[in-house]
Length: 107
Image (cartoon, rainbow, N blue to C red; front, side, top):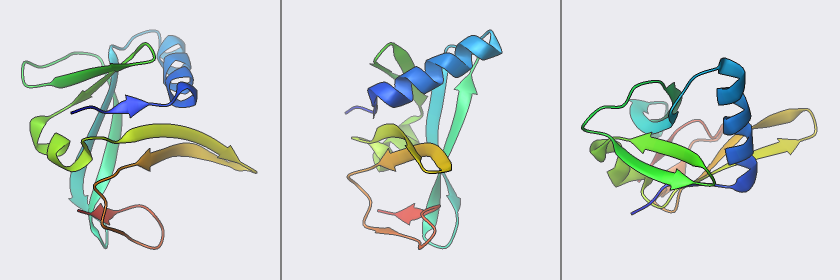
């Protein structure tokens, strides 16, 4: 079981945490949303919980909860810049279908 970050994603997250001046890492989870059923949630973590499952990737701690982990286990978070667009990309091996806009998925 693991969630990883590419080197680009880790560098981007580390830079944002440094700019914020605080943070233990990022939290990756899922929520019910969108036309395909689930959407990713990504947020900074300032305090951890006993229920957190953590992974270390390229110097960044990734937090998640056990319920979300069932849907995102094996996911690699990447950061890409294509033309004027830039952002995180979720490479999740569990995804069976995604909506056309890429905002939601199902497993």
